Structure formats: structure tokens, C-alpha cells
Figure 1 (cartoon, rainbow, N blue to C red):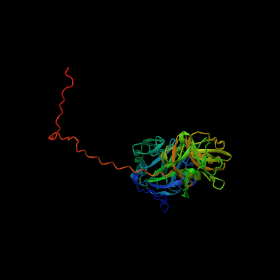
Figure 2 (figure 1 turned 90 degrees about the vertical axis):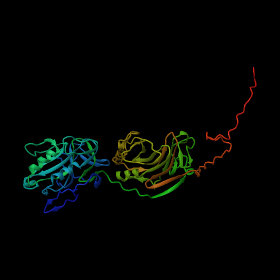
Figure 3 (figure 1 turned 90 degrees about the horizontal axis):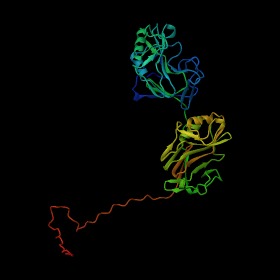
Figure 4 (figure 1 turned 30 degrees about the vertical axis):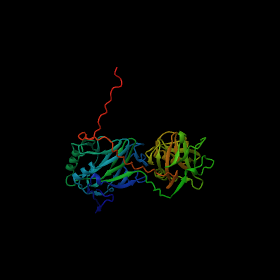
Length: 446
């Protein structure tokens, strides 16, 4: 594989590739906001290569967004301006290209490989030639892979036969490059991708190493645990702090069960919330903090279906976040791609009540509102149907609901059948002891 730290000897960039199988693909690095330079002032490393694309890319929670404000080219330079590149064997370059992969979240993307070939040496001042190879057709949502027989295109002339924007199978273009390259040979300068309209890329694999675009989320450590008897849950919000019923019901719609908390009894909706006070309320620091909290939340549903709930303030506006769909039974956790809703409009964030959207997009909208976000509790909702929850975990703290002290029933051993000495013998060949038939005279003779 190409090392992330380029090996230099006398100013020569070594581009020798150690090719690996797909099963051996390694994670190279995570690229986040600020890790991609906006222009080619420095070529080595991740940068934006199009003259007009400096304001058309951004790393967000779900990947690298590009092309939304005009075309953009995001590439990883393997050397710096003025470097001389060591030639690479044709078979190695072909293998590098055909083993590459781009994971596209949405939009249309072209994989790109800029190449030096020919001249006195593989360096821009030494008369070397340059072209960028790219597939003739873009790739869309999913995992894009490449084949030697695919139609590819040049950005600049390779030879008289293959001029600017010429299209031919990748193998033929490589043949032409190496034929024109002569003694100097050929070598890749970089690899990356291009979009002319809005697109999102999650990762790219090159030389057996995968680079992922996105955000890093801090780990939420386990901070403690508690056991809460169901009988200790308060029936209303007259006192908000601690575990209580968040809905106004005529009678409590929750009770103890063998597995913990049974709520939504008789189909009456019930919302069991652990309210924070001024000292325990969580002030969201940034998107990464918010996302880490949500992805570490967990509910153990023993029966039925529940919604996790997160009541919070965005500035002066109140809302409760919850998944668009109920979950259970089993251990339930959450991902930023899951669909969630806000119970209320949040004007500062341009969020509409009950509009379903990816959790990552929802959190991002709230954070980008520039309002202080304060989480005032968390809990679970059973909507018009009973459900049973054993544990809820949030911010590293696990609550176990103590229900009924049920003793598991031990199944009885099957009884031994009683043998009947008078039972008929099924052996038709042994009828020595068969009873003599009883003969009756007819009682009525006419």
C-alpha cells in the first residue's frame, strides 16, 4: 500500500505500492472538519483541487459534502509541488485503481487519479506529461468499484490516439500512458473524487487503506447505576426531578411486572421520565457531544414497543426528541441515520413538529441554531399499548426498574404411566388368553 507518510530519497517521492486483498483493508485515518485544505497551495495531503470549489465542500456528521455550491474536486496528494515521483509498474498502478472503492451516501461522484508520465523525469519542470483518469460515467449511492474493462476518460492528451477527454477502456488508456512514458515511466500524483453537483462521500479506499470522512464522537463512560422500585415512580409532574409519570392520566398507567416496569397499562399512553434539576441538567457543548450522548443511550425492552424520549430546551423553545418509530423487544440503541422527530416546532433551528428526519440532521439543525441546548431529562414512552422495560441507560448511567419478585416456575417432571395388567395385548400372534365371546339370545323374537 502507499504509506500515508511519503518516503523521500533525494527529493524523490516513492510511489511503490504493496497491494493487499480486500479482506486485509485497513483503516487509514479519519478526516474531519478543517482537515481538508481549500486549495492547492500545498499539494500533499487532502485538499480541494478545483479553482472554483473552495466554498463547495464540508465535512459533516454523515460524510464529506461537496459540489453543493459549484463543482469541487477533493484529492489526496501523494507528494508536494516540485517533487520527482518514482515510476510505478503498470500492473501495480492498474491494481491500485481497480482495488479502489468509494462509498457514496448520495449524489453522483467521479473517482479520479492524476498521473505523471514521460519526459526526462516525473516532475513538472522536467517535461513530464500529465492527465487525470476518471470513469466515463459517474457513480451514485452505494459502494463504487472499478474494473479494467470499464470505460474511462482522460482530462488531457495522452497520445495522438487518445486526446483530451478521450474515452476508452481503462486498460487501453494505461497501455497508452506507459507507451508514451518511455524510460521515465508513469506514477500517480494523487487520488480522490469530483462532483459537479451536490453529493456526499463517506469513505474512500486506496492501496488497501480506507479513509473515512465524518466526525469523531467522545466515548461516554459508564458513570454509575441505580435500582428504582416501580412503586417509587411518582404519578405526576408535581415534582419534576427524578422518575415520574410525564402524562396526565386519571389513574396511573404503570405498575410493577416481573421484568421491571410495565407501562401503557390498558392501552393508556404513559411517559416515564427521569427529570433533571439545575445541577444535573446537561448543557450540550457541540454536535459531537450531542451525538455521543444519543448513540450511547440504550433501552432494554422486555415486551411491547417503546419510544425513547429526550426533553430539552433550545434557547427558550421546548421540545421532546424521540424516534419516529417505536422499538423492541430487546436491547435498543440509536444511530445517527435513524429517523427521529421533534414534538414541537423549533423556529430557531427551522425544525417542524413531527417531521421525520435523520437524527444526525436533527441534532445538527439544533446545534447550528446557535441557541443554548439544555437537556432536562430522559425516559421512555408507551403509546396506546402496554410495554415492559427492564433498564434505561443515558449519559453513562444505568437505571434498572425493580418490579415484582417473581419466582420462576419449575416445570413438573412428567408422571410415570401406570401399567395395566388387563390392557389388551397388541401382539395379534399371541391370543391364547383372549376372552371367550359372550353370546346373547335375542330378547325379541317377533
